[in-house]
Amino acid sequence: MEMGFPLVDHLSKQNMSLETNHTYDVAIVGGGLAGLSLSIQLARAGYHVAIFEKEAYPFHKVCGEYLSFENWNFLEELGLPLSDWHLPFIKQLQVSSPNGNHIENDLGLGGFGISRYKLDAALADLAKKTGVQVFEQTKVLDIQYQNQLFHIQSTAINISAKVACGSFGKRSNLDIKWKRGFALKKNGSLNNFIAVKYHIKTDFPSNLIALHNFKDGYCGISRIEEEKCCLCYLTTAKNLRDNHQSIPEMEKNVLQKNPFLKKIFSSSHFLYEQPITISQISFEKKLKVENHILMIGDAAGMIMPLCGNGMSMALHGGKIAFKNIDAFLKNQIARFEMEQGYTDEWNRIFGKRLLAGRSIQRFFGNEKLSEFLVRFIKPYPKFVTYLIRQTHGSPY
Ligand SMILES: Cc1cc2nc3c(=O)[nH]c(=O)nc-3n(C[C@H](O)[C@H](O)[C@H](O)COP(=O)(O)OP(=O)(O)OC[C@H]3O[C@@H](n4cnc5c(N)ncnc54)[C@H](O)[C@@H]3O)c2cc1C
Image 1 (spheres, rainbow, N blue to C red):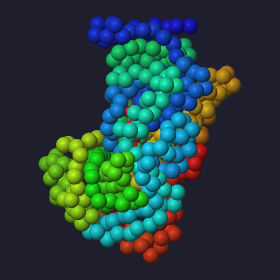
Image 2 (image 1 turned 180 degrees about the vertical axis):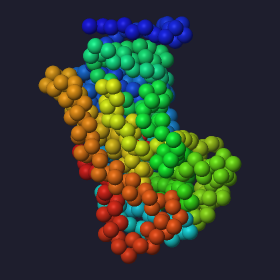
Image 3 (image 1 turned 180 degrees about the horizontal axis):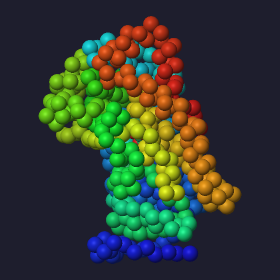
Image 4 (image 1 turned 120 degrees about the vertical axis):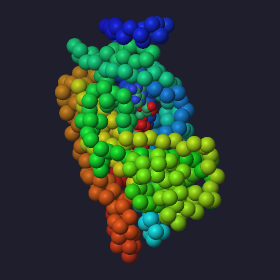
């Protein structure tokens, strides 16, 4: 059955030519790793899928761009030719305290470096080839649930769907519109971070990821494709305010007190004129299902980007969602069972990892604690490997 859904007045006037009425099996809001990987799995299983992305591919995203190896097979099975891309394999971790004390350790399973510019665009391409209807440069304004159907209202088109998924990332217009708990919280220790990212060319080993601490933050650096490096840091909004809202001033006065960062900032070739930035990052808990909409990836909960496991949680979360949605659409389970099954599995697989990330995060970005951590664990490399393993998962 096809269903219509009226656009609000000013939108219908602007976008009349794009308006269609169509019912999909699944509508996905947000074309990052969670949404795109889910859309491909669903389309392969024969479902009629639409995904909305407010930007146009390819585009840059704030992210450290270190992806744990646990995702390698899954991405290749989806159809990405990772082995042909000659990506750097990252096996060593270096951690430094603000004054330059440092440790280096084996990463265990390790990971590989790839830019989001390349990865997300390749997945979007694959989604289109698999038959997913990809609406680019189309922002979703609201989703309403009525009589077992979701009505999705966007800047360009309105559709209906039997299942709706929210994979719209860390913070979106929909979080505010739906008054999600984390978006309403007052600024505190878990919810007022900013992040800054550059691509640079610099002399940096291809098998290493470094995490350099500075006052109230830490900066990751590792290689991606084409011999470039991703340099990405997380700090508090207060740190920027204390430096007159000036990123160059903060980098000079705060980050570059760490001798490793001083060397990187003074000897590298920065490939963008301006960095890419995001603000109001929150690591607060989030609901996995909102008004029957399954939340996936960062929209379901964010892990501290220490050893970079957010991308794994987005991809693996998409796989868990697929399993539950598939069973629902085949009438094997009821809607409430799909919602409960997804929530339970998400918590079982990621709960411990999030807790470990939160606990270890306390030591990062804190001058005294990060110094203590580096000095304390230096003689115990096995303990470092253990800590890293707590924030990582296994191939799935
Ligand atoms: C500083 C920092 C460094 C990080 N480093 C790493 C790392 O090295 N390794 C790692 O594994 N993880 C890292 N992460 C985490 C990782 O970036 C995220 O976990 C991952 O991107 C989540 O993917 P996602 O698909 O949930 O969201 P996203 O990739 O953010 O995708 C969400 C998409 O939704 C779109 N969107 C939002 N609202 C709407 C709307 N209303 N309509 C349509 N589209 C919409 C957005 O444009 C976006 O493309 C880092 C995070 C931060 C903050």
